[in-house]
Image (cartoon, rainbow, N blue to C red; front, side, top):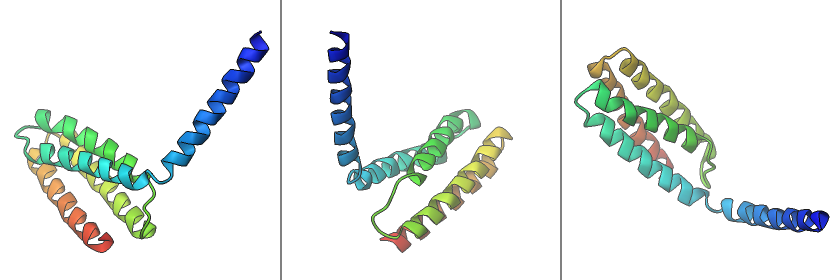
Length: 126
């Protein structure tokens, strides 16, 4: 009985995983759009913050979202997308350093650089 249950469980798991693999490949465009929307919300929250305490959670979420986005595949110019994501990762790191240093003005200045990068790469990729 246990062998039979294990065999059926293993077969069901294999079928489910193969189905997920088939669904996940074309879902990247939708996933990129979803993560970009989260990045925009996090960015806006950080920019509109009036204190480091208010800004810090947005910066941490932005960093996580940029990391997620940097691992996704784009159907277009992947090299340019990758370069833009690496630039954003570095810039979010700069914002995080300013947050850690409790320097709101430096954090906001670094966020402006992120906005410029966003516009630059959106122009290149669209």
